[in-house]
Length: 154
Image (cartoon, rainbow, N blue to C red; front, side, top):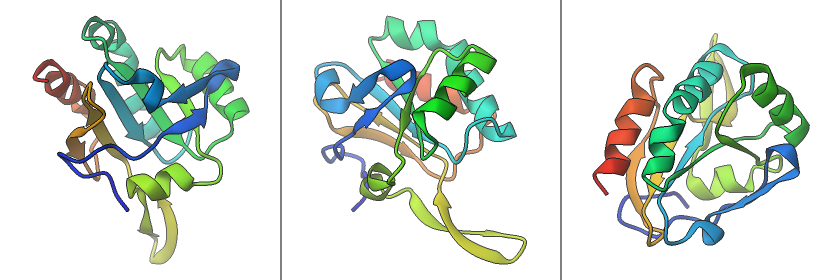
């Protein structure tokens, strides 16, 4: 299964930072940005979270919730969020079920070694719970601004 433009978004119901919980069903009626990233506190993932944080007020003005998802623990998310003063929801998908459902748990290669990992991908979910836009194999530079433009276009 995979999240595809024009189709209903897969379920997302996960524990989040600061003892919270995030659910797409609870956000129905409002747009959401769901971005999957490999690992807390790594260069690209930190930059991406900081870029979304820098635009947090603009996403909020559009009624959109920005949710970052990785397989890191909630405790790790709490440290990551505090260290960089992040203003996005960080959800923990420890068992990988959400990654599987959204189609971002994929074979990867590093130094010739193959392994399974999270593809850096972003999804805009509209107020009706449908996937409006999909970015796969995301390059971080300028990405958050591009996502904001897509949310404004909903």
